[in-house]
Image 1: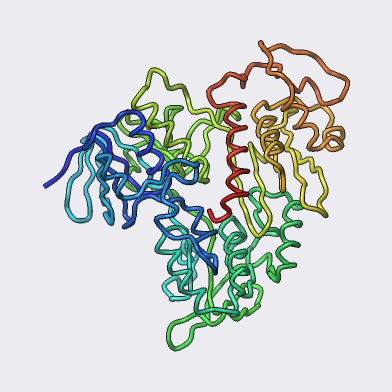
Image 2: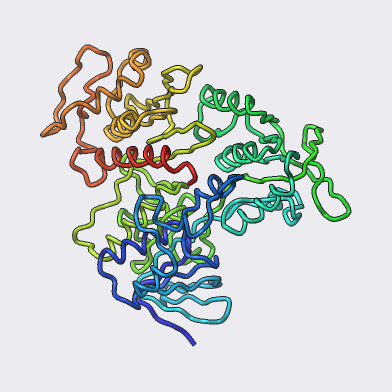
Length: 484
């Protein structure tokens, strides 16, 4: 027993919805496309789960945040998929894949074959048991990766009003959930082994600002230690968290956000792997020509840095999915994926955006006692990353643009003194008609409008214009729809 499709998308996350929409825009016929997902609902915008879904009043609920509202496009409800002849195979787990035979086997014993497969399996949350700590099955221990997790978290919050929550982890999930719990009038303590929050992205100075802001909201931080065990009551609920440094923290609920791992197990030994994911080329095509990979699971060449990376963010999932479909449906007109890495977050009344890479030396600017500040990262004489908190639409566009240009920087002190005005100046320069070396202007910042080598041209398919459009949309979305 089995079914056959021309195109199959494996995974029902953000990338799947954006790929489906792109397929319909490019003329996919009814009955040609199938989406297989372990979840029981159509693809949705996952960022809503740590934001609007957790609000105490008028929380976001489906169908409000089905894809692709996160990019201000159509909302793809189950009815939409039916009207477009797209088969949704929900609540279905695939237990094996054979890329040579182009088949997938489900847990129910059905074989689904394809001509082209897009792997959008995403990633799973790391569990405490992988670090030698038991207790994930306790009803008041929560993770946050999918809708089932979110519902469990909401239930724990509802039974924890004005109680104590302990968050294990100081990354994205930890910071965003902490803000939501505070809004729900729950006392929050964050525990993580590092010396600061968001250590993979923030500098110590940036982290200090956010930690101080959270402390003013009542959040407590316990750093430099880890969870070792839970104390349970007779009903199997966690009542306290025990830490390696000897502390015991009372807990009515626990949220765990200690990282993710790409879901690649179905394809290990069949496809080339790199950076923990499925290695793909600039068309998002794997080592098997009939298999593409997108989102968290894909390790793709980032042109800006001339190296292969995996990007664990919704923006990458959306764009890589669209690009893969373009490469499948119109290969002759589709170039290589050319994306400026982009991350953002919104908590309380704060909103930041980051572009590029945080390697090299950080140059901070702005008023860290106020609400608008940022940083540039300069590596090997070029600006490679930009961060801005509290920016305007134009300012976010400017830092996106300057990062995509990767300009030469000769004087870090001068860059620090100019701060955001440097990016604004670059963004107002007319695009050059050719790549030339204009020499130093005497500012100490080098020939910022153009590069000495034509690595990232203004007319590339996804360079400056794309970066600016991303920033503009992110700003609009952050101000108008703080729910996801």
